[in-house]
Image (cartoon, rainbow, N blue to C red; front, side, top):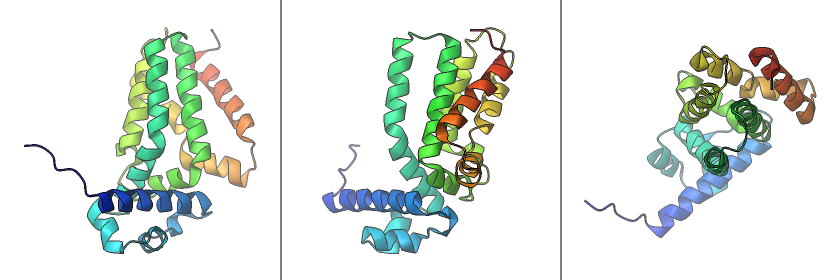
Length: 192
């Protein structure tokens, strides 16, 4: 059965909702206080539209994250296809990309971690990051448990930690990126 094309107004509403949610989370210093009512009002749609389209707040946040991650997924895929760097450098590049994404989207990602998904480790975006990082770690000599190591390294870039370090501790993003690279050296050894 052919899938029916989405109505033009439904596409417009979806884009308006995603843009409104993205803007509200980016501007909020307290992402847990961004409500479905706020998002619906900013998008110019009824709250029922949000629930019909996204199911709940967690579904909406997941859709915003997926939209924001799409360019990164494409860039990661291009880098993997080119495979010009060492496996260790790919691990560092992936962690750095994840950290930069978390820094730039820390309110949205904090909201995702707090969205009542049961576990942030079950979120689709986490599964994607973990899978590509685990695959890269499998290629690094001396890494005996890439599955666990990927989880442990991703714990270092949790959104709540990133937000705390950047917003509360006033750590400069470049300092945080340098600290993450040093942490990777501690985990993998500093061999190049």
